[in-house]
Length: 302
Ligand code: EPU
Image 1 (cartoon, rainbow, N blue to C red):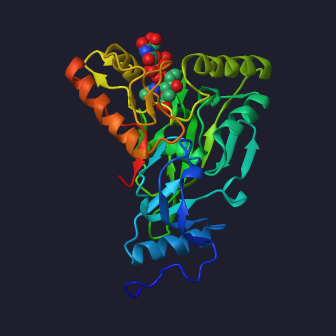
Image 2 (cartoon, rainbow, N blue to C red):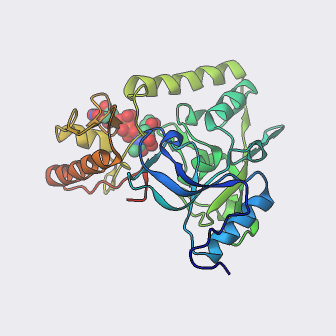
């Protein structure tokens, strides 16, 4: 039991206080985390998670911060970052891949393409860790990560580790049925393919994104999910575009001219500018199309 007002992690050298989160996000904006936890082993992760449970401290897990907006006021909780090499193991056995949650998805895309193992090329151009990619079922029109997942190792907030198998995993559009707060790693079943053909396909997918998305600006990918209607999915970007919102600005936040579902953060932008712009876009798209746009980007602390 922790005493009220005491620092619950005082004796843990892998936990720091009041850590600015902006450098860890693609947007490079937002406030600080009350606690920043960088465990170097399963035992350290379990210990920190246990203390969060005891002291009722909300848990947040940070990947590469690509699909994330941190509020200017920061995060009143513990932000975990599994970036120690301990969390980034990779084993390839034939067509089976075993990967730690901290592994960089883009590095994995390149590595598997080189090995002539197909299945993950659909992730070309999507920044993030394997854990973050699984949590969101990262993907797009070329496929998603869930399609080749066989098992996912997770940990609950009490520190119990268990394995979820393909049969009971559900991968839907940008969501999964994994409720445990920590994803520790996963296995994938891939398919043998000629490495040159695979490399060409990977490049094509990457080029598509480069040509249609503002990849050289500060953004967090698509801001809204593509809404599902009776006639299938519509592109949120197309809806925002048709509402005439490209180029709309609030402070340092701007709707991209290249792809309207991207909100760019210019120099000096605050998270609040982005949040205000998000609200305006939602209102205008609702007025024009009668469609409610839901945020795809994770918003912490607002
Ligand atoms: N379009 C417009 N105006 C725009 C943007 C798009 O008219 O400003 C039109 C395009 O011309 C095209 C259609 O909308 O006819 C679809 O556009 P796109 O191919 O870019 O696909 P999207 O549905 O807008 C989705 C994912 C992207 C992913 C791409 C490619 C969502 C919310 N977005 O975008 O994912 O990269 O497909 O696979 O699911 C992300 O999740 O962060 C993301 C960027």
